[in-house]
Length: 383
Image (cartoon, rainbow, N blue to C red; front, side, top):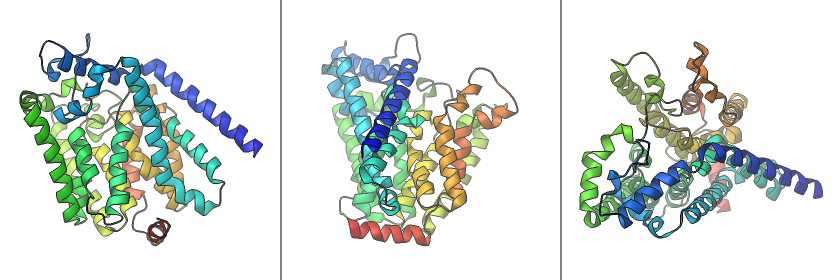
């Protein structure tokens, strides 16, 4: 017991130091953007939230007006309180997600639950996308929790409210809308309608309260990629980012469209073959969302966590190796070696590690296997 407590304490200290070092680089940059925009919107001279840019940068508020409504308490809180709330929320949601994703693995292996779970949480927080979410002050794990909870406990248990969490997440940030497509592909018509209706209702509510802002977002701000950064920046680990770093500027957009269509077709084929494997569907849809989005910063890649855990948990030997390698290399910051000093031809691999691993996870993450079906039934019994 004492040895396990000591080991867990050391793991916690190492995790804290890793996050602290990341904070010295990132300095809650995104929270500062949100905070400045919301302060300007609610307490400024009457300008729109999309008018504000952080001084000296092209970065401004990029989310739909409903997200601004959700973040409106920032207008009345000191920035330090916003940072603390964001950190606590990210740590707690990460801990909750790891319990959902890894509890069956821990139980089946016969490990001491509190110790194995504590180590798993430390590993998850150390994972680069999660620690970047913490130190940028982002909302990624909150959105993943909304979607995962909706799928696992709404859809998985046949609840009438299934789809609400996906709809709310989509209204806050458009990219979780890929999970509405997942519901359609797997013929969950009721849940898809609920998710679509929730997203539309939240969006219309924001439009009724903030008509000018809604008009600006849907007609202008949404299409202005300069607000989120340069597509070719190394942190953009989507297929679009990968292509933007290649010398194919004249055909890049067309090639990207083909890649998106092929990727979506392959994903749809895999999830449609195993409609009852909800955890597998969550894993693959999180991966495909990262791949096809025009901009997937590294902190957005928290959506890869379900696939990594799924590979380690239910995969064959090669799939377990894939999951372990994905975690280790994505946590190592190895890809940043190519940020400022191109080193061709290795740059094609090293500068796009997240893209390559995302593609590998999309292809080889286990879904619909006999073992995953058994685990799904076991989870129904336990819950």
